[in-house]
Length: 118
View 1 (cartoon, rainbow, N blue to C red):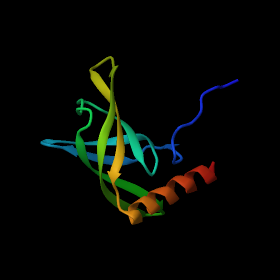
View 2 (cartoon, rainbow, N blue to C red):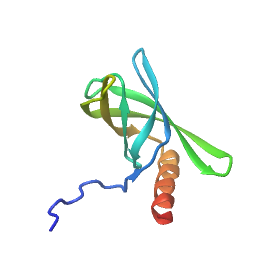
View 3 (tube, helix red, strand yellow):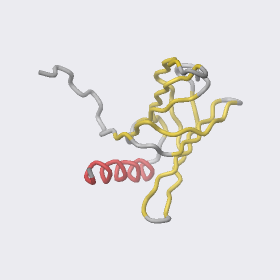
């Protein structure tokens, strides 16, 4: 029996979406590993300090040839170094702490649509 209880308040999906992350002078474009209306998880080639404030631009596919760009701010809540044969990489989790209600609604609907399509 699985005794793990999900603590997240919003559903999370595994999805590869383009994501631009900016923190200070550092800017990178990565793919999400998973995402919800309250946060995102991805891998990057540079560790971003815990509790750093980041600016994020997310591109959501909303239909054939239609994308929605969402800009928001977040806080880095977890960074885990992972080994690669070629280099050091970092799994990074960000909590969205500044997202408009409209953007949160669009992201929530996207997550819900992906879940229902499975």
